[in-house]
Image 1: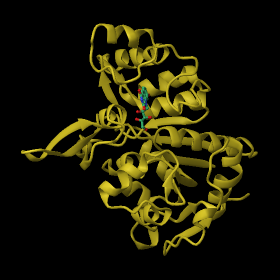
Image 2 (image 1 turned 45 degrees about the vertical axis):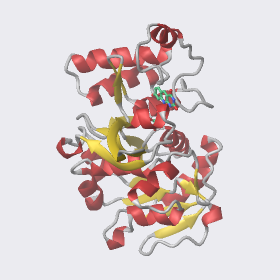
Image 3 (image 1 turned 180 degrees about the vertical axis):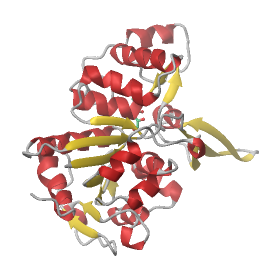
Length: 327
Ligand code: FO1
């Protein structure tokens, strides 16, 4: 059995822990391929930082910091402090000493001409996440945020900042005119992405940010078409529980693209496959029971990812049931 998961960063990593747990309990030990968003990636201090790939890799590899959600457990910040002493901008991004080693290895391999998918494979040789990690593309795609700032006497001014600056430096506190996925038009699915989708027995959309993570993966030319052609059922997991997102990012992004902050809103945004969308199934939290998505099989299960086991016994089991996979 082959499972493909479209995932972003922190929420995606937690969900993948559950998928891996669920797969580990099955005698046929399904293979899991995670197709991970790379549009949050950023180059800072000369280093290429792949935040979502690293969140998934560290979390599944057992090296992540649980309460921070990103970066390494037991992290130190000596280099960051030294950079600040030099006044070397940006000082607002938290680069940990251990994390920097990952970025040094990645940057050196990228500079030597290795594609991101090969770099990710090399890094995973150490971390052994237990799932195959594929970047959505090997091409450079970055989410930039066009701000709509009302400057007195000058009307609404627009300037673009990298997603990480909006999210980390400004805590997503500046109003957004629109998100732009820079480079998306020329991006190609990374090697293995389309093949994994075509060969899957079950395709899952993790409860990641629908706008800057899942939508961006879907915007890579060729990925949406591959999903629509896939024989496997596609089941999404709502990132919104009871009208509020689990980790706060989605509520800042959904209004920008005109999507209601609700399980129903996000479900309708992805759309039911029967009506030209992508979902055969849509998992919502029990507080959102009664959510309707015509043409899709909507099921209400507890969605709070308190621990991988809970995730495994609820979401993935239900998703597999929707897909008609043998229990
Ligand atoms: N998030 C923060 O809120 N503050 C940080 O300083 C920060 C640093 C950081 C460094 C490496 C990395 O892989 C992730 C980091 N993140 C930080 C999280 C990151 O901004 C988000 O997890 C993703 O971009 C959103 O999915």
